Image (cartoon, rainbow, N blue to C red; front, side, top):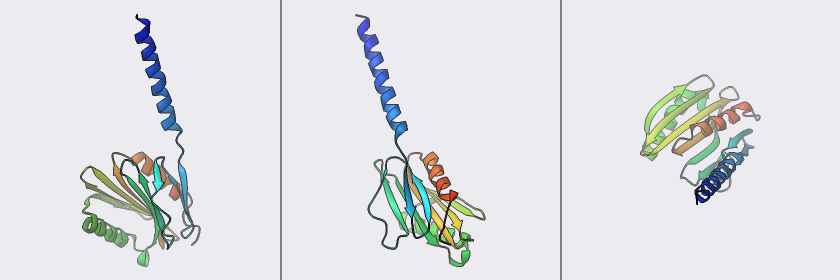
Length: 164
């Protein structure tokens, strides 16, 4: 009689290990943007929402939990990263109602974070070509995907904008 509970516990442990191994083994995919010459890693579970934009500026990825990841390039007017960030923040606030929670601007990148309900918005712009263009990751997250966001941004930073 005591053997049955032990066997059940062992079976449950095997199932838990199999599920954990499956989640760890999920592969990251790669997105390359020919127009801006950038490549980024895309986390497991994010699938393209459709084809790349007609102007080849970027691609939107959707996750089954409702999160979105958009990777795109943009031209930075007058190489003014701060003005670009201010414009993007104003758009996110007025168009989508995001409440800005913080921003940081450096010489070669900028980031802002916003909140809305149970969602977090994290946008990072990495400059390339002497500040002429920006490579952007826009994570609209349900839950905490900061580790994944860090990896996507780092992969984009490794070799951005080979089309300067």
